[in-house]
Length: 353
Ligand SMILES: NC(=O)c1ccc[n+]([C@@H]2O[C@H](COP(=O)([O-])OP(=O)(O)OC[C@H]3O[C@@H](n4cnc5c(N)ncnc54)[C@H](O)[C@@H]3O)[C@@H](O)[C@H]2O)c1
Image 1 (cartoon, helix red, strand yellow):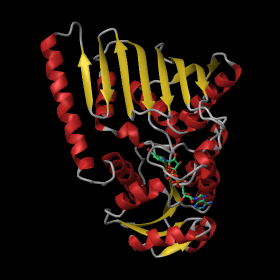
Image 2: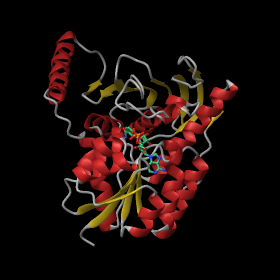
Image 3: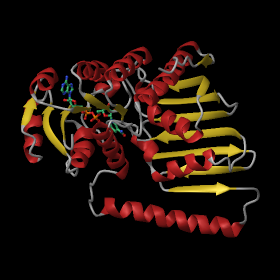
């Protein structure tokens, strides 16, 4: 196989802004068809991108469209069924994050994909930010010595005020931000640490009038290698911000999508000034595209989508696997239980297949 046919399931924000424009740049990909319940909107968009087949029901697309793979870009609560049905029809799957809402269902999906030798990838693109990858390599190189603490934060205005203007499904799940921002943050942290979160204790608040939905959650955790840490996710912020800190006996790393900084021992004012200048340069650089109205998809989507296509073509592995997606859901289930019970909860990981 030297070219693959892809179908897109759900032509909403992420499909339109990121995956379709990205996949369209690949010479070895044909976006053969798409499924969208809002058929009128779907057809308008598909026409713009020369996508020939538009279906209201993705089952019909799976059955009739001669596909090798699908991208699941649906609301979270629809992921499991759409992925399962695609795997049942021998299609490779890229599922946007999270990989469904339940760990036991995600585990089922991995079993099916493994048995059928199909690629199952998850859209945790944010861990692919170059600066987060640098941070992961620094931790792996043991330059920080024994890691004792890690802290992560991911806050943004949230679905209505943010980059997803119209969808209300985000507010139908009482756990709100837990299955929206927390999946990315947990994935980034476990990836950077090369470690697993084993125990969590979380608190959450719901501040959206008339909606009983957690919009801000903070938690503490322990890891398998004996570190402790905190995670914070929130909607309704003016800021759109994420960053990770890892502290070890030999040094610390501070990372966000624009910079990564390592500190060993004392830290002088000259180094501080140099870092600020470097940071300002990075931020200005990253904003120039936005100011000039450049809406090209973020490079992390390019790398994630490219790796998925390569995995399908060459029988290889994606950058973020179904197993990674499952691990995140296992942690989120412990966070959920902790929110309910108000106590610390151990994460139950399933055996690796
Ligand atoms: N990787 C990231 O950083 C990132 C960013 C944003 C969203 N996402 C994820 O992408 C997914 C979609 O989010 P979004 O922001 O594009 O949402 P959205 O609401 O904008 O898009 C979802 C689309 O699916 C369509 N749809 C709903 N039910 C359908 C069905 N049964 N069949 C076909 N189409 C159907 C809707 O009409 C809508 O067009 C979510 O899982 C979200 O978590 C990931």
